[in-house]
Amino acid sequence: MDPLVELNGVTFGYGAEPVLRNVDLHLHPGQFAALLGPSGAGKTTLLKLTLGTLQPQQGEVCIHGKALQGRIAPHVAYVPQLETVDWSFPVTVEHVVLMGRVRETTPWPWPSREDRRRVAEVLERLEIAHLAGRHIRDLSGGQQQRVFLARALVADPDLLVLDEPTTGVDMRTAESILHLLADLNRQRMTVLLSTHDLNLAGAHVPWVICLNGSVVAQGPPDEVYTDAILSETYRGDMLVLRQAGLLLVHQKPHGHGYRDVLPEPVPGARPAPAAGG
Image 1 (cartoon, rainbow, N blue to C red):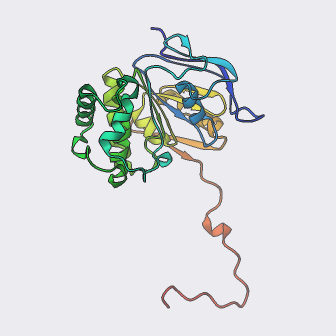
Image 2: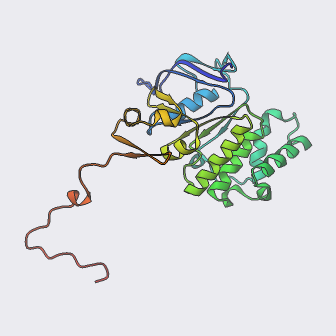
């Protein structure tokens, strides 16, 4: 099967120092993958290169075997980080989702009957049809994430790209979002997301890509989640625990506790009074 996405020898930087160096990466149709790495590792940059909103300084990015060469990637939809959205903009859920039909709309400045039918279908699919007339600022974090996911899906993309889709939501909502993405993937949607949550990705995503300036390793979590690979990716001591088929990742504890960093008491000084005393 030919790759859907190819990054071949891609290097990119915002200044003199490259953020990504000589990245080679292939994603095939129907794949569900997560980009892992610390802040500054180049995860968002790699997503933008895949979308075509950034152009590599070296190498090439191909979608369906064709180099983008300064074009926006066709049939690729994007869900941004919630924290980058201006929630004061006066717009309803339906209007936000209609924005995803821009490439499909007619020259007329209003949505067609087909646009509205498709929006209603996607809202129903994501179980937020009852929110169509609500202002986006009045929604919960999980509802907001589903709205922007609906905006992406209404364009019928081949590839769904999400930047930190579980940031800013509680654990239950985060798991709900990943279950929803897994359902979409089972329907042959190709999904690429970035995340800081190693444990959530390890539990829900079948293919992980460790990135820190370049690809450190990639594969199923059972193979990639090792002390050595994650320590190299995060440039710190990482600990991987395996128990009853579950993976748990944590930074190795330091050799001191909080009491070791408290100031030494001054001889003869009276102890501070207890709170409320």
